[in-house]
Image (tube, rainbow, N blue to C red; front, top):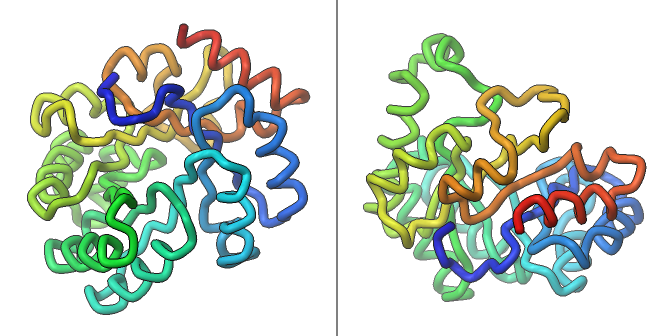
Length: 234
């Protein structure tokens, strides 16, 4: 795993619109994980104050914003998210060079330490899905293409599936942050994920951040589920 500052690579995806439930989950798993990820469902329901409440728990926070708009609009959004204390936020690489550079520059003007990463191909998509939206596949090629664009634009890394880790490491080097959703422990249901891998496999392949949601948050005992994942990585 690349050494980019996360001693524990597990970030738990807190995907709920309920602040109380989100805080309860976050406090339960906090001793066993390296960070927390909050997505659009939470951010839409709870807004800036909700994100600040998660940040105040003291763990690194990945704000899964997935901004994708004209450069000026994304720059404005990037400035605002950078004020809230998140460690990482993301934009869609397919927004293009001007949008990516605008996001990075705007965020850095507020918080030089915040990391801006780019979504390549959603882990719910397979090759036929790319064809249907007019993107050039296969998914691996598109991920590497967009990863190269993000790196040239000065972004800190990308979101990719575990299947693309090796190719991105080869293309982008060891200092490019790879955040990997679609992580499923042995025996877990895939749900709507397609390009998946176990935590140990993904960490061994070179992932910096392992985003794990339902296998932990929907478990009977989320704290124990998080502890089991952490133990599997030792």
